[in-house]
Every structure is written in structure tokens, then in C-alpha cells.
Length: 195
Image (cartoon, rainbow, N blue to C red; front, top):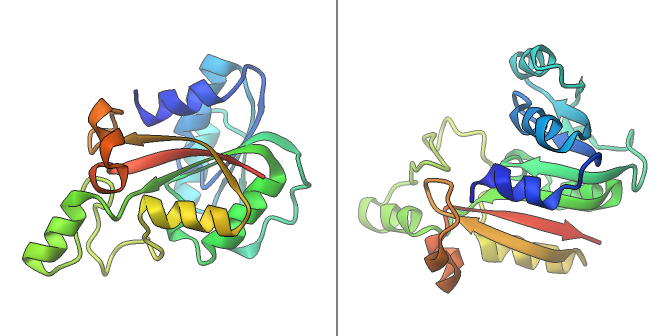
């Protein structure tokens, strides 16, 4: 089960969906086809905005770090924050905001606690370069790397409920063995959260 299929399973037909840091709009594009959603993307990169528009995705240019006050509470059924939280200056504020704006939120994160990251640090003594974290330390947009445990503790501190968690390996597949030690074996995780 891929990240996209997990997200599709958590979204109902005709939901109103906001994708923050939507990139080129691929998730919204697929959800429009499979779930007939009413969608809006938020993106900061001009090239990605152009890609969204080519895919007929409604998108606005906005820096999430500047705040999300332009969205009222519970104005979307689902808010998606996919592979974005680690690039934000204030991930805790973003979590509070997405759970305010959406009745449900879906967050995907790369897991810095993955065994390949740990092994790279142990053996090479260098910041890891892996599939979920492909850039060198000096060129990465990631400023807040965390493990699954870190993310879940932050949710708890913010009184945010983790409704479901699905973990995937480096090939973006959910495998049975990941449940034995998710913080060590999972390359990334998809969370369904709410207030």
C-alpha cells in the first residue's frame, strides 16, 4: 500500500480537501480522479504552481510559515501536509493550524530514526542521504528532522489525537514487518490526526 493509496483510503468521495505544500499537485490530481474531491492547493514554488495549473488544480501562492489565518476553522474536511512539516520553521504551529482548519488532517513525515539514517551516522559519522532524505545536509530544505516517536510526542503535547498511523519502507510500501519496530524500520509514516 503506497502513501497515495493510504491517503485515498482516508478521504471520502466529494470531500473538501486542502493540500498545504502541495508541490506539483500530484496528490490532488489523483484524488480528483478517484474521489471527486473539491480541492485547493497551497504552494510557494512558482514552478510547482505552474504544474498545478496545468493539471487544472486550484492553487494559491502562500508561505505556510507566514500563517494560515486566511482559512477559517473547520473549513475543510481534510487538510493534507505531505512531506512538508520538516521544512517549516514552526512545525508545532503548523500542526495546531491544520487541526483547526480541517476536521481531519493527514501528515506524512520522513523518519530520521530509520535504521539507514542511524547506520550512516554510526559508521560514516555523517548526515545520511537516503531515499526519503535525498539531499546533502547543506542543500536540504529540511530544517526540523524528527523520528516517529518525536512526532507522536509533539502531537500529544499539543493535545492532537493520532487516529491512525501507517508506516512505509524505502520503496513506499507498507509491509507487515514494519509494525514490529516502526521507529527503526520505517522510512516514513502517514498519520491521520485530529483535535
